[in-house]
Amino acid sequence: MALYIVGGGLSSEYITLRAVKALARAKTIYIDTYTSIAPGLDEEYVSRLAPEARIVRATRYHLENEAYRIVQEAESSDVALLVPGDPLAATTHVALAVEAKKRGIEVVIVPGVSGLQAVIDTTGLQVYRFGKTVTLVYPEEGVKPYTTLSVIADNRARGLHTLVLLDLRLDQGRAMTVPEAVRLLLDLESEMVAEGMLSSAFLHESMLVGVARAGLPESLCVAGPPEAVAAASYPPPPHSLVVTAPSLHPVEEEALEVFCRTNPSE
Image (tube, rainbow, N blue to C red; front, side, top):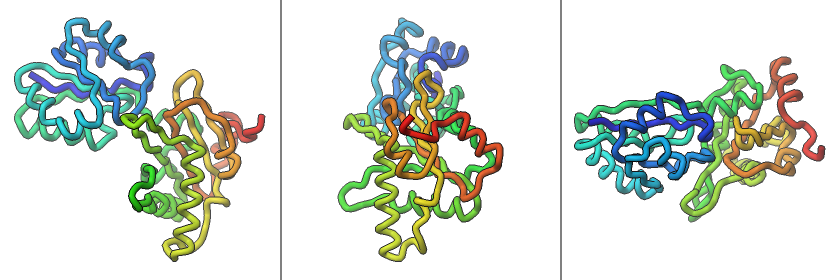
């Protein structure tokens, strides 16, 4: 018996042959609808790949509050968790794999087409110039994501880009967009400078890159100052944001001009 954690890629068009074979072995397939969005990876599609399997839409509650049930099930039958993009990009999936391993269950990780790499590829920026990746979450109950801006500032101080992943609350019907993210970061920056948490404002001097639906046919990349990136129109999420380093390599400058819209009014 085994627990298969299967990376489904960016959409149903990106699923790999190895992923298909893993799903075909499973008695139960949980489709992760919590951590990301992958168009087409739904019950109907998965049922065609594994017609004999029981298929469950796994919400945040399934993956966090009832993860132990998935592990228990894998003790007596083959179980697969189908994850949008990368199989272990989220802590939720790592915790599930660790718990299964601790119980002596075989864990099979099936890599998928990387959503993180797809964002970087869409921009043309050089992957080795990226620093720590960070997530920007919605403020709630008086708690604001100041740490996100601190990570961006630290990466910039070291001459590195920052990939900012945007909050998904799919169980609430919410998915943060690039315009929302830019406005939130600007508000946070103003507050942090006023409170002495940042020595100075830097976002208005930064080149931002908004990316929507990376790797999909309707993918869009917009590069420019914060106001321009926030004013652009984007296709639906998933969205991501890149805050570039203070200086760009000439090849990166040319790549942004070629790959991304630099005039959102076009």
